[in-house]
Length: 325
Image (cartoon, rainbow, N blue to C red):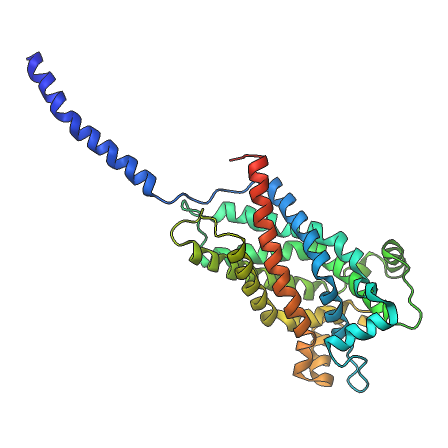
């Protein structure tokens, strides 16, 4: 009897070994799921990438804002982006193109941190077991990231930036520096003075990040194929980010123009966001909603490309320095 039992066990061993081998092979062949990202790493990577990016691209933001504020079609001050650059350098020197940088720099670090942390945390909650997000979940995560950054950071930051740039066009500029300007704005207009154009800003940032994250994530998934953990490299990341930036420019420049007008020094002439839309359409025509598109396109494509590339590479460095699950 014992001999028969031992014989059966020996006969079954090759089958057990074969099953185990097949399981190991299947496990090794299965693509690894994308890992959840630690919120502190998202905060750090987002803040660092946002600060570096704005230092590289601010002159194009300056030119875009000047062209959007140059609304008096009867006697326009600037004939185009390059003319705006020439006039600014002639009147204020090269660093005149960086007027208002401090307000944007102080806000870019927390803005980028809020944006990426919000997106990553919603991604962590909604992604499936393979590390993928559905199309609707990508849109939701991107929209949420944009709304969060708009309310917490972007609206006051952008309002101050636009007022600084607009102040430079006046015969006698009032603001002597960032903190002096903020103090004057709050003293004269109250805290609400830094939240002008909130509706337009929420619409702009919400649609901006919804479009950008959707295009970027969709294209990255396509490049990665069946492996969401695959590293696609900096060059492909940069190119995909540029495409995502271009898509957001053509998708929401009209909202950006309205937001800029609502935050300028002449914002009092508009009753609300919708009144601003109506007056622009009535007095300046449809094309006025696309003023500043050329400099914005150049800036945003590079902006989004570099910030996504920086973010991914900084995240890799943080993962190496600080391994987390």
